Image (cartoon, rainbow, N blue to C red; front, top):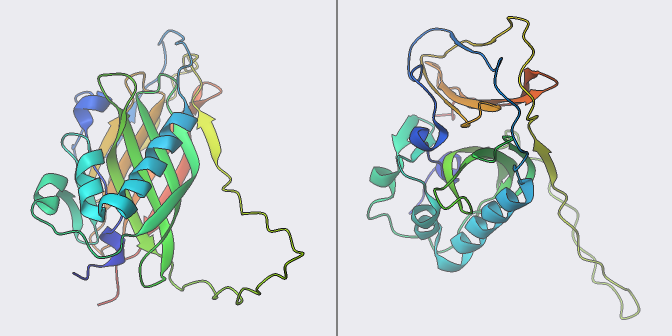
Length: 255
């Protein structure tokens, strides 16, 4: 089976887990206020979210790519393909695992203060050697320990980066140190937003949907534009205001 690389990194969307409120899936600008909410205990844990992403990637290699997608998916999951967002259950149903899975790893993580919602971004390599970027949204499950993916988007770099130089075999006296993966983690503020009347305004694409953490300290939305461009935007609470921390966008694939 040969699929476009842009849909090889899985996604899901569980609005019930994120408690988005009544304003989801409504055309036109949406406004979200975080003012007036009491401070919360900071329980967001980027390390726990990173562990879930790494476990997902490992399961894809060891158990099979689509098997892992099904195992780690939250309820109401969707996958953001080049043609738009599709239901993950339908997409994954009966889909056979490819001989070799895409390999990926996170490099940056944002989590809400209450830990109910998190976003990872990172890099991937497909079996043909193409590299690219992805973003995945994770929802904390009812056991308050397990994260499952709720949204993911990815696409290969265009153009691809130059090929790395060939590795030179070290001599017997050389000490080789394995490369370490660097991950940056961020936790949203737990203090209430400033009482200054300011709101977060999000302009919507032709197709768009928004999700937010239970404490509303982290907000994200996917967008699908008429020209085929697709992407995800993330805001989280810093210094009393919702600050944009991610705007990952991919153009339409060449026909």
